[in-house]
Picture 1 (spheres, rainbow, N blue to C red):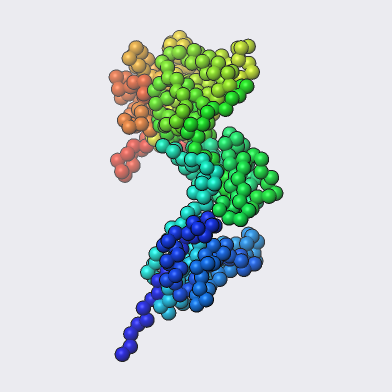
Picture 2: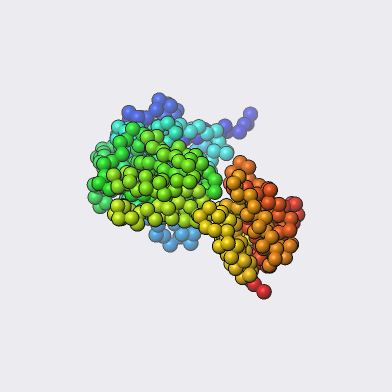
Length: 499
């Protein structure tokens, strides 16, 4: 009687961060059940994974040492570094498959967790669809580092970001600036870049360093005090939870004017999000403050009415003069009909001349509306506010006439409100003197918000009663086109060529 040899079982066994006492009961049982124990190693042949599990290995275990062919990104392989590794993983998987096909149970050892930056995952992707597979999770280096620091890693609504230190410096900076808590893996030679990124993100003072957690030679200290020449690969940078942290005492703070874009959190740039995360105090018009997500418990928020810009700016600068890091929150881009001008005007007074002030850009309402409609700002354009609260209407009329005469696309901010109802009709009638009645007009309301509405009408059919303070108008030039697409959507665009 003949039959097919039953296939063996594959285990991916997480061993934890280094101390054999942190292996799980499931990991020990999987090793005990295995006929074959496999582990990765560098070219010197030593394996950290094997050393962790050593007391559980038996003489009758078949050991498969999967030795990496290279440890640095220099190779003469025709596929380069990645090609050489792919060939290695294929060969290693084939060796394990031979055991599995022979009916043997194979345990692949992995320090930490098998599917967290681990070598085992490359075996898993090549074998798990063909063989009965169980992954035994392990304590990660992230949890081990937090335990050794004795500080909470994240709490309440805080976001934890795990980042490989091999990312470019600008990317590291953006991700570190825009999160609450973080762990940066894979230090070693990347440490100087990671340290610079932490400093640029304003987080260096918060950063902690953990080396070889739960292993021989363990070290923890403030990251700013670490000698880069002493940093091994098995180390991490940690930004722990900042809940309950007292704001540092400073001789002088700063004011950062932050643009939130046209709506909520998805429109924040990483740089702006970082400034908001790092601020002790958020100051702004209440409507705009409500757009800012809860970034850090303990932050103070001061909301105010939209018509007290100078007072708000002075309040923010006074807080900064007393050592606070203050973010002044503005909608859209803070330099476009927004708070940057008000802050800078007050900052130039002698009393605040020594207070640092920065302005961070945001997505403007005009750019957001244009993108939602297509590309109506594809050529030269002018931006004009229809509000006559701070400038007389005859100035607005003169600028509208000049822009229309120059055949510019015109973005109209602040077109109307409850107390201003005639401006849209007056602007439309003026432009009809100089533009074709068929000129495309984008009527964009609440772009990025829950009530977003973007329509393309003509100048002659523009209805002033449908325009409010949450609406932005884009008036096309003679070249602007409106085209209905197959999906029924009308898009507007202005060609880059003229004539």
